[in-house]
Image (tube, chains in turn green, red):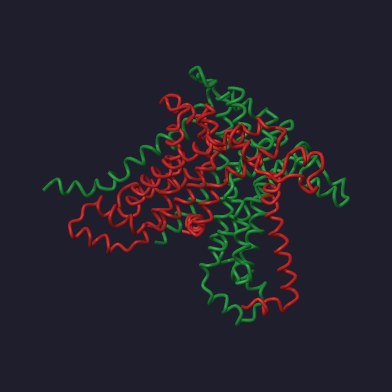
Length: 294
Length: 279
């Protein structure tokens, strides 16, 4: 029967076709369409007309672009250092059976359950210049000079927002490292003890190298998350004061939806895409390598 | 190790105290939010944050629920989240099965397409998706948002389920095939039940993610009556600029559903997070 020969080869495509069409229409297609839009003067209403590289020429002369890019880089540097080190330290501590480990773990990953909007609102109130918890605490202990306008001072605002991101991220990193630690064969650790390693040497020479695949994932996720930064900024400051806390995603949103310069906004998103593409490829390369080991 | 033995070393004791302090500091934002929501804003403004509360009441919650609009925003969140979750799990389990269990040209390329798409800063898709919903007449409807969430989450779900399905022993499927079981029945009656742990983990995680989305809600919806709670809270913030007790009470109420999911399905939630990263 000819039908029987043809049919089995088509089976996977029956499973794939529905989801794939949806994915192509809503995710992959739009990714390329953004590139097209970045070469147009689209305003969101009339139909877009091609204007060549003009959006990019404007973008590279726009000081707000450099402020936003710089803020994204700050966010990235903070995210691949503080939560990674903190999360790793917590995981190493809580992986041992210390009393109350479960309480500690839950406390650290609780912020992850909150939406970024809620985090932003709760922290905006903590940062409140007059009656927020932070400034009130400083005043209560006589350190009045440390009380700041956390979200209104141009030098402080970005760090204040990044701190909220870190507060939420540490638990996530901890969970990933805890899972990585569970996967380590205890005989390696025992062997290093037999060979005379102290705790630090065991961590440095045995556990950390074994955790390096998790570290790659954690770092890539942290970088992507820092490029995705939007909600906190949008809720807490909208990029202000004077663009000092603007990040690329927020800058793009304002240009596109408040100023109706959608073509210009698209050129910002292309830059964002190029930045993330570097790291996505590094990650895919790693996935490919592990795939080939099968 | 018993607690007594653990605390015998003074260094351990000191480290433990440090850990307790850091943990308590970590919980401070929750504590201050709950305290704030129970007080009146005037009281805080006049007497300061550290004064003894004049009154304790749930007034701010009532205000946020009734006049702040949470009574409509919260149900909207469910109307958007539940269908998106069901569709994305259903569709991704189809494509994951094909990618995990069949050899065909382009298998790996498709897998990479899904993985790569998942990692995209989704803001990149903002303008085209906005245009697409307009063109399809889905702008400012639940369906536009549901369609996008379903499609975007497909990437992560397919990635995760595909890797999980690969761990199912092939003999089980082969035996069913020998017995003349059709491919769709194998998928539904054999593969899906075996994938349940991964589906449960994924469902809790995706519920939280979709429920907590803010960006797509503000881009694809305009009517206040359709907004989910994240976008609603931002509106609330604009409306009650000067009354933080109401804003904070609203924020706390908005987290109740995800907190419930988290408390009851914590194990699955954590599993979902780690499945994605370590497999």
